[in-house]
Length: 228
Image (cartoon, rainbow, N blue to C red; front, top):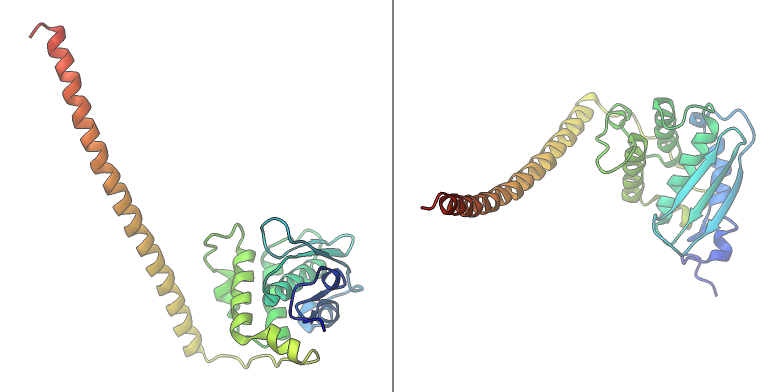
């Protein structure tokens, strides 16, 4: 008997990833109120790949209303979020790309689809860190919240499960969470700055030793040139 939680290329190409029916999820996502879809569900293609790096990835062609997901071995929460990301592309205006409208719609769809608490204002100003775009940092934050809420596990256990949108957070709690997030960013940057300072101080000491060595050598040859 096949363990559907595993990674099986034949199933992946049919849109079944680690026991999650991505086609069924896509149909559900496309009907989200926050998606604001005005045309038919995009044409979807799922590729299975065990070669190379890059993890799970996707690409959407908004104008032609189609998307492709390349699925490697990984976490089902990643696959679900990438699917949602590409569907939001197809629901947005053609030239929107990863702009603020896209980010707002992605956050709203994730909140509605998974019942997770997401602070839109904070995410729109999130530090991009090692990501090339803020939208990708937003993706990472959504995946982290999904993992914490065990979204993939719950959908695997009950495919028809519907999540309730979270109740609005009190202003005090939002303020506390934002302050904690900002403090964490400051701490990370301070730690990085201290590490870089220590590195360059070590290099400075080494450079001073080398400079002293060659300064002495230059002076030696200057004296030799003057016959002293």
